[in-house]
Image 1 (cartoon, rainbow, N blue to C red):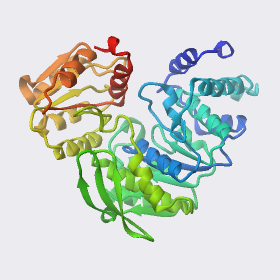
Image 2: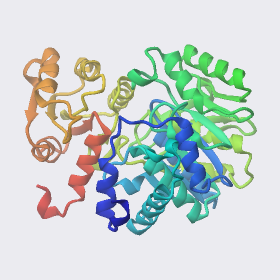
Image 3: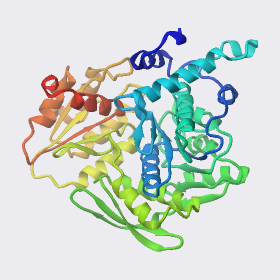
Image 4: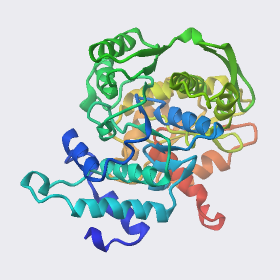
Length: 442
């Protein structure tokens, strides 16, 4: 079947047909197939990112600085918003359909050429593994020097952890998510994320929760990894402007240096600072302070407090810590009119706690809910009833996402602000809606 796939649409359909949360292979399977591919990326400098929130943003900040420094870098992230090609990018440019197909065909060919021993006969990459293998081949062909890898879920058992050698590891903020796989406490979750560390390889992490930092440090000590903590006092003088945030960051050799992030999302100051701290650990003389400042300033990450239309913000926050960070940012934004919210979520997240947090914030004058497409979608009635527990009749349910977007974002007054939040899948559906030809949108 794989040999007959010759178009991008067919390749995307095939990958989508692979179960995402079942039939997971063990790490040895993944390592064996990566070796069978010729160990792509083994001569590159690999930076591995794990964590609960902020992974994708840290990856994007790193690669933006690499670009400013004239360094060729590949970036593998997930999930995508509109097209699978977003998951693999070189120097900020996502793979073309032709490049995607070349990588797909290579992985398919290597899969058909697996040795016929019984242990290997039934092997097939999972959804995430297939895309990871494609990305590593794509980066190898593109001749990148650095590869920035974002874990999909966890760390220790994540497919991306199959790479043998790493230049640097980064662990972003840790929160409650995917507890059925990672553990019920923050230290347990942190230990799973810390599984990306390697002996002698520096690990950069923020000191936000004492128990999390202690667990990361204990894991690092057991395997001999060098710890590079980002302390809270390293970030100061945060000034929120109209569309940007200025802050100062303490760098070991330069004292405090000024940076600007091109967003009003407060949480991005932490992610940018973590990326800069990581870049300093590389000791690459091409990565200068001006390159870091320019790279941080120019980075724009879709679906993270992104202003998609005037005073309309799209944010992919999808767990309790992400929602709290979202709410903190909303509070900083002055609004002389109404604050309107469009919400949706998937059913395997802590939707009740998230909805309670949003409703009890008291920030939103109007709340709309609309169901996502797909079997993971949280039913519309469940979202509506959950909000009504706290808001009475304030919540309105929409059967159609287009209608919900029209009333929330397009029909608002100039002095109103509209926010769309709850899932990166929701962000993707909104982005796809906006990319349609104007006559087909609304």
